[in-house]
Image (cartoon, rainbow, N blue to C red; front, side):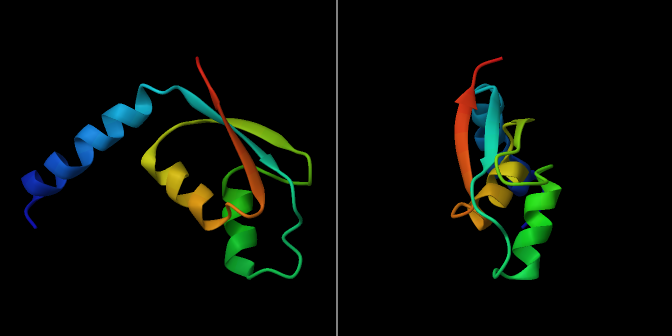
Amino acid sequence: MTKTSVESTVAPDAARQSDSGALRITLIRSTIGYDRKQATVVRGLGLRRIGHTVVVKDDPSRRGMIAKVRHLVKVDHVSE
């Protein structure tokens, strides 16, 4: 793929998600017993303990991280 084709496939999707505001992410389950990579993703989202909530910008990279640990977190949309 050329650089222009990558931008053309990613840009509309990224623009649509950035308009939706932010995401409120809450850790609802422990990472104990799960793969270490999942614990790393949870820490990368800024979550430290069960019940901890963070508000992050809605972008494709965070959506991908959430998809990897969707069984451990609760996600709500927040309008800015």
